[in-house]
Length: 317
Image (cartoon, rainbow, N blue to C red; front, top):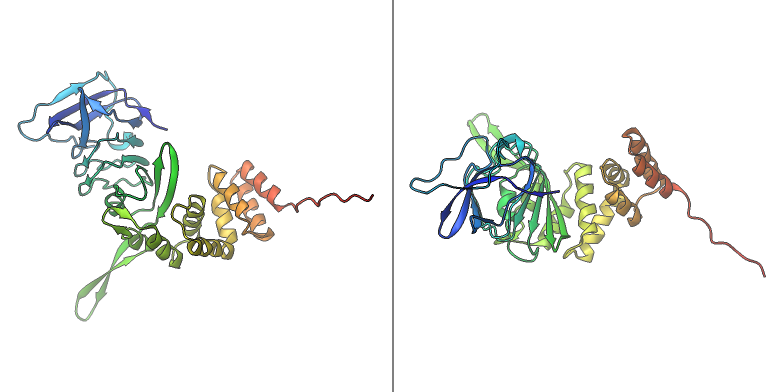
C-alpha cells in the first residue's frame, strides 16, 4: 500500500519540468506528488534515492517544497515501496543505488528512459507495477534488463491487474578453455530470454509464452508461479499456451500446490485448486506443508478440496 509522500522535496526545474533531487518523509512506502512548486514532476535525478547524496548539475537553482522537520531522508535502506506519478519520463543513473530494502516500484507508462545502474544492489526488488497498457510500449523492457534477479511485473489499468508476468533470475558464467587461456561467456537461466521478448518497448506475449512453456531447468516453484499467474491473468494467452501451462501443472501438481500453500495469501491456492489439476496425493502433501508452515487457512482450503464431492440426493416416488 502506498501513501502520499507528505514530506519535503529538493528539486530543480529543467525545460519546464521538475527533476527530483532528494526528499524526506516518515513513511518508507511513498507515492510521489504529480507536481512540485506547480511544475509537473518529469524526472528522477541520478542517486536521488541512494545512500550517496546526489550532486545537482552545475548552474541549476535548487528549490524546496514542504517541511519535513526531522524526518529521515527517503533514501537507502529506508525505502521499501515507491510509486512514481504519471508524467515522469526519466530515471537518472544509480537513482536507487543501494536501496537494499526496496521491494516494489510502481512506474507510469510515460517513463521512457531508465539510465544505467538505476537499480544496482536493489536486492529485495521483486515487484514492478506498471500503470500502462500491456499492448503498447512501456518501461518494462528497460527495467527488466537492469534487474537480473527474479521479479514479477503487474500491468495495472484503472486499479485492476490486467496482466501478470514472472521474469526469473539469470546469471552469467565464465568458462575457461585452460590450454588456450580463453574464456567463453554463458548466460544461465530462461529469465534472460524472456527479457528479450519485446518489439521495441512492447512485450510480445506469444513469444514470452513460447519460451516459458519450453523452459525445463527452472526450479519447480518458480515455474509453478509463472504458470499459475499466467493462467490467472490470461492477457493475450492462446489456447495452445494455456494447455501447455496446464499440462506442466498437472505433471508437477505437488510442487505447484506446495508453492501456493506457502504464500501469505490464499488467493493463488484457491485458483490452483479450481483448475482441478491436482490429485489427492498432491493435495495431501500440500496440506501437510501448510500445517508445518502454520498456514491454517491454506490447510483448511486443502482439507476441503481433499473431501469427495457430496453425492446428489436421490428420491424414490
